[in-house]
Image (cartoon, rainbow, N blue to C red; front, side):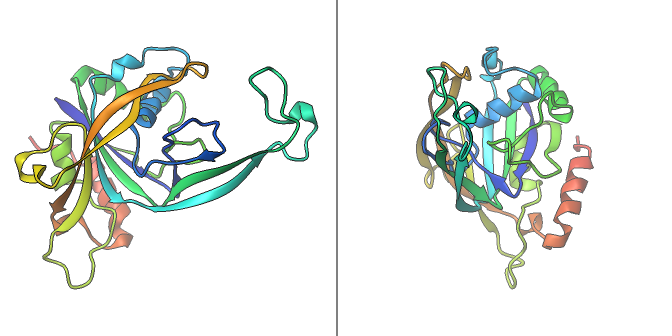
Length: 256
């Protein structure tokens, strides 16, 4: 199957694992499948209550953790000091009459590179939508705007191999380590190869979206395989040249 390569980077990201309406709005340490499918659906103009997200069931997603980021917490209020009619709404059709307080967790300065594999027709349609999205993409929350370049490559023959051998890493070469490989975390939906199977951890996460409907949001479980891979030092370089290297990679035609 062919695929595409995305780079998820920005000042802040937040990949919620629980309901959006709890007092503490957490973040997973990596992009969830639910959030990525939501991003794809938004790009294609599919609303939360429209259904049709099963069109993404055939997609396989692999995440490379370039930088895990730093977790920060924002003390957030909605509706404080406002007349009751302008405070947050309740499920019964009224208003709360007071400020709603939440603590929102974010990942600061994180970078993830994502390989998406699947049927060529699905990926071609998705690549077109990501280049000209119906609704702008964001990194888990609307306030989390992605850096450019966002869609690095489309129609890649082996996108997972691209993560291992070609996509520039978003950190600098440490002094005195020019010949040493770099340990990088990967999260896969398929069991790892024999080379890395012995070091793989398994994670069960409840992030496969069944419905995005505001009144019936639901998810089911999937299993992830977490490994640490040794990547070539050649994928790094000076921080000041990172953007140029990413653009060069994005503009290079895939070699046959």
